[in-house]
Length: 256
Ligand SMILES: [Zn+2]
Image 1: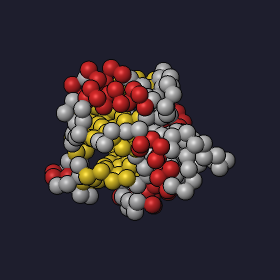
Image 2: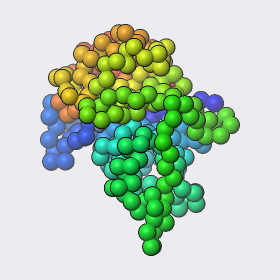
Image 3: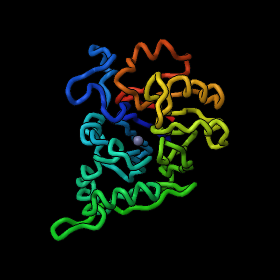
């Protein structure tokens, strides 16, 4: 069975344009410069696995006509990856089943504190989520629709985020960990989807030079750059890249 990944959001925490209409160096006339906050979805038959619940998740699912969610995997606890969590309530009502949510220990405990009612329920509101910690290897879905994951703990500034590897794809949307070049899990990939916040160095994200270095060493068949800041214009970035490296854009489809 064929698997598809859709980049739902390719922007950094502020999005493009920013809430006050600031576009930075991005040209307004290119639709690929309109970026919502980072998240993606893996679709294999009726198995739809959401990666992160960004503050834009409602619009992202509507724009891509995604009618259901089977489970959610989270990269880390930051607001731009998790603040859309409460938007998932209709999938609990529709499926009459708690939504399976996976993340590392820090992510799950941070979310339980911030959104207590979604995990434990309250007088008038039932809990809608069933949380589990990610393991180094696990699978989601049934029979032919099953997706097998490997996870790797990576550095994202002062915290850790989870890189997900599935069907020869690695998804590392928030990271500045250069040691991944030595890890066997990232070798022989078809597609590397990777954080490339900006051109300048940053304390918690890769910049372009670092990503190109990683691409050269790991040699995936193709590399997709995501989590793009508003100073990174799509066409300007594209011209700086080798032919098998491309900037992500919202709604980009990758067939695995
Ligand atoms: Zn983050």
